Length: 176
Image 1 (cartoon, rainbow, N blue to C red):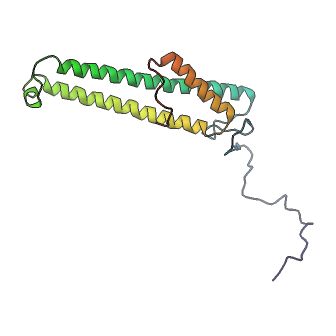
Image 2: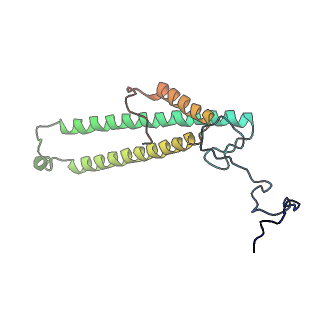
């Protein structure tokens, strides 16, 4: 049956339930896929991290700067731990004339050295996992496509580099 000729303009649909999209007490998050400076209904990563005022925006931007600076602190701690571990391993190997693996098995304390190297590897793996998690979280912050959040990430990287990094900025920025 063809109803295209019927006039439905006089019908009022305002009172109908359309799935409860605007429920009272529920926060509404605006998801942008294009660059914006708008903070209206901006949620940062979680629905609970909702920008509701200028004060919450400023507090959130400062928190993002601190988090991003913290990422630089973790990267530097990882580099320092790696350098420390290399010095320990080289110091252990350079202490005597026995250089091949079969004669190193005869050295006293070989078992302790293997355990120490395994612990070092575990600590390095933990630091790496923290870096990866941190970097993906920062990527999610950046993917709000909000200019204010992006600037806070950049400022945090700047502050973190100034405070924590002792190496040249030659490594490219990446998710991990």
